[in-house]
Length: 353
Image (cartoon, rainbow, N blue to C red; front, side):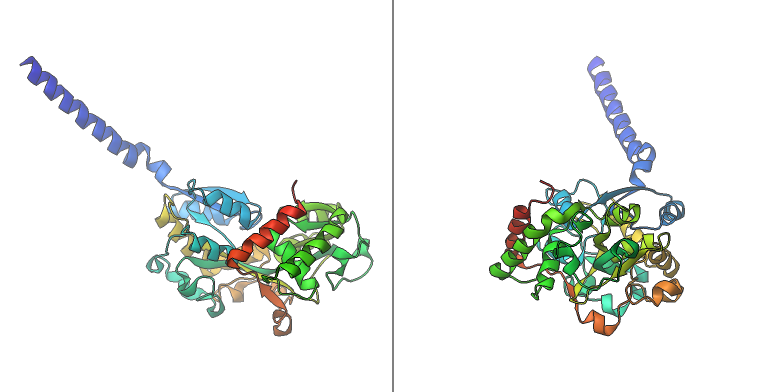
């Protein structure tokens, strides 16, 4: 009888433990389940969007930021540490797909996908939008203080002619910096020719002492504070400070530049993919999409949002470049095995060392 009582007691304890575990998942753990973990660039979302989504979907958002695509890749590559949504640039999407790091999207959960401008549907780096949907797009160029510089700028030459030594900042993004040097030299920023890449590297090595900072997507802050007079930066970052600083200008240099699309993706191992799909659909709402681009000052890929974009932004050729400028803009592409040439060049440049 005692042995039977012990057996019954053991069964009761097992049932109670199972119930507690279930209660933890559905009760005490419910708050944990209603968390969306986002990994995005800095200054890249209108502040009111996060509380709006949290209230509408009864969820809490954890929002971390990264400085460049390589930092993002390094974070996800060893195994997703718990992010539900990430925002890689076009060429990095292609790399992450090749490495099996991105989930396929369920577009039945994203009805607002129909709002996407046709030019962002079926991109070459992700045919059929199987793994990503465009978030924002823009260009890279030069932000400058016209009062300090003394004249309008229209060429990358100011980065390389030593005239503004100690008054320049560059990005920390390897492909962007090397690609810009290649464009200035008249080469394709996606070249796989080692001689051309080495020539670009030598140009950068020669002018690196002129650079006061390699800024992780924060060159606009240095420009706004007067720590630099010229910043190689993303278009929207410069436009964000132009509203408050009348001396700041932005230009797409005449030699051409880099155009990019950042994308919303769900990494493999995302703990809350359903919430991630809901957030993607939320961003594609016309009003939310307009709110986003009116804050970031980047181009919206959302055709339904365009009529609600601030008129000054919508009509600015530096944000929405005309066709003749678009012809001189390049997307950074994954170059396969030749990626090591760029990585080696960046290591030799010694940024951050």
